[in-house]
Image (tube, rainbow, N blue to C red; front, side, top):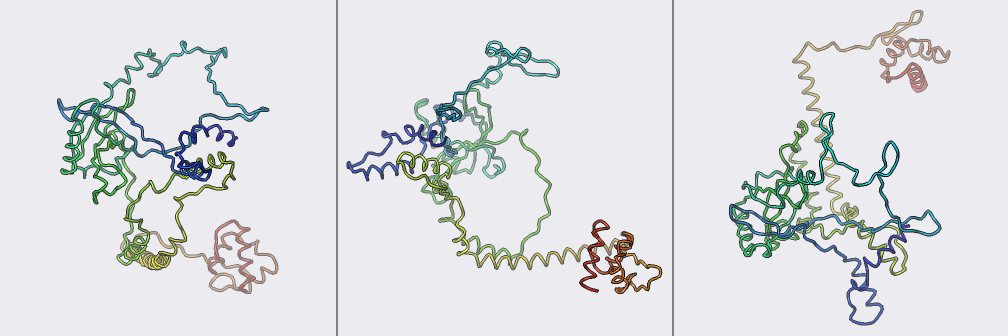
Length: 427
């Protein structure tokens, strides 16, 4: 099935028009060009919205375009293949609405949309349904400004959209857009805006955040373009109270110093994570299959995943430091346990009115010589050899076992078995 699905997509994925032109007619150059084209295939960035009015203030409007810079790419499958018959066929989906009482086909004009309020249904026409979702058309309108420090990291609810000026709607948009970008960077401010991305889209609040140029050392993201980003933030109804704060155990300076050495050995080049250097394993596996089928080559067994940690290199770099940190962590943990134990005992002493500590009951069996634990070892051995340990009650068994440091949990059968094992080993 996969073989047929992938072959059906070869014309779209690696058509001859998309292959880089070869400088010579040799088959080797053509093969290398085809291989390079498949491995470096990227999805072109299409505008999420175009020529959207950007209202900066009363009477001041420019036009911008929006782009989804960070977008998950998935293998595109145009159809499904049915293999249940003699020949594979393209599966065609059909949808039909059937009446509940007569099972007849319900036509589209008979379908009505309604909302239930209490026990009644309120019906709406198509025009009324559209008017409910009409919030005034697409727009991006600034409603105020705030310090960038007031924007919390937990306020992120969706991926950000990159906006760029467009001269098609309003001439001079680039100049005004640049002035706004520079002002926000210099003042360390962010804009708060009302945003409707598309027609029928739900309105949302966004923070307009400026990003520095890629050549700026303070940018932190040299692989991202300079400009403005629309950062969706939640409404007050979307915010929920977090869990109750947990009592944390603070680390010691010695433990922190040991961990610093580990972190320093695991730093990425430049201390920056660049997602463009780690290709999507699922997408690359899709292209590898296409390449193998197109060239009639052997299909690989498993994909290459660059996101898998290099465990050998990690162990070689900081394996010794991790071992040292683990030893120090064990010592610190023992110290904390001792402190907590001493603190608990001190609190119990200060209370003084706690419940009395239970002491193990001393059982004495009539007709037998006993010591402080109720039964002597000779008596236990005698009962074991005679097979009469099971005649003792559960309370008597637990008392004897507790005096000898044996676990007293479980049913009577488990207690007898556990006591017999102890007698065999110790008496």
